[in-house]
Length: 565
Ligand code: ARG
Image (cartoon, rainbow, N blue to C red; front, side, top):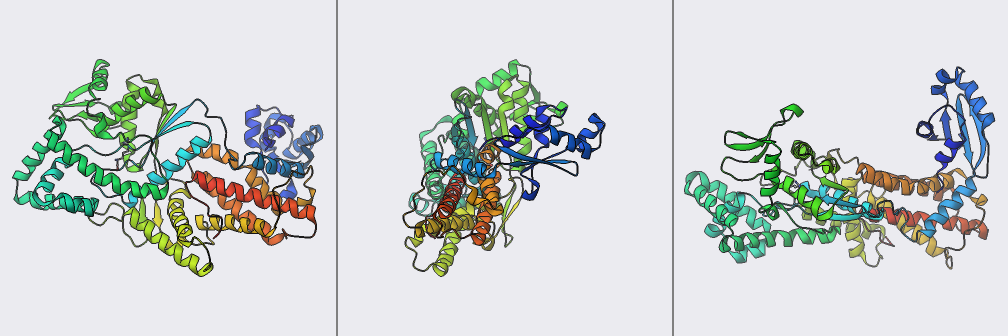
């Protein structure tokens, strides 16, 4: 779509910088006041006239053309009317020309973005606390790819730490391979809990765990073999969930990958005089920046989470030469990211400014179950299963004859879970409710999918309609509902860019809801199938572009759109 704001800004003869003019032009809420408005109040002081007089003066000076067909001065505002049938023609032809990839751009060509997301922990269950990082990270992956960026999806596995020494002790005492293979992470968790129950009365366990951990670090074959077993069992389980969510990674280099890559970064920080000793530990003092020190080496010589993240950032920069590296991690880790970003900045690495912590809020379930409650975690898999089962129930009631019912239920149930993490500004805490996310009439993904399927069924009923040529003139569509719908569709490409710039998939989800609602209003007010073929064809094109943008938008959020529902 033509950049109308820019065009209008070039027409306003006011003593302001273009950027400022641009920022003042807004879309009108009521199209009887035109399509765009410019308030003149701020100019009063500069131009020494009343806002109403200024509006009159600017109005008289504005030159019209084939895009801006009318301008009015009303109560200190300048109202612009665009050539609406031209705008509709443009949006429809843009969507058709994009062939299902509307909103794509090449703005990111030649640039690389690393996205660290999901980043699960070995031997720990994949619980609902991982939903947001997985959904948001994966959506950002798709959004940046659509904008032409090369994207590297990284699962920075939590696969290092003294807990693995405890796991080995527990496994050797009370576990066996068969049970572990069969029961999966649940069994590993059970062993881990047992270790902590037994430890107080059997203090020798602590020492044994320490020894086994040391053996992992030294690369002892037996220790490594067991560790690899735990890792495989965990990842097998996690990957079945990723497959259902259609989530992919390009790298699984986690914490342990950096075991042998920390010396050089530490030496570099030492050489720059950043590291000081404090009670035997090595730290970077951050008092001047209002933060506690960043602990890098413990007094026993072992490294920390931050040490590995510093090594990882340096390694990623060298390996991928990223323009940006995003970390999609809960806001509880705010301090950690601020600290290690600061350390890299103090080290004089100018790319430290390209590291971004994409923080998000907590997920809890309606019934009060929290993602982190000890021993009572809510598995992401169980949430998906339940959502799919409920979706299936609803679909069976609404459309008992639907073919592919299981597949559609999976798409709807999975979509609802993903959408719950993508519908609001990411920093908000989420209270997950099955009834709410599966409400087909609510602001939900089933509603979007349902609207998409409805568009398809209209197109199907139209018989031999094929998206035919773009007529030169869409005057038949001159009504407020169509105009509103088309304008929203026209704003989709910008929304994709905004979502990327703000790391906020919710910019897209909110627009999709607006589009679906606008479509349903359009459909209530206007007969699509009619005897007037010119009118019918134009309206069918509106239906087709709506379907296209809904499908595309959902895909960018990682959600599939079944053709029939
Ligand atoms: N595994 C960590 C956790 O579950 C998240 C890791 C995030 N990524 C990172 N580079 N620190 O809390």
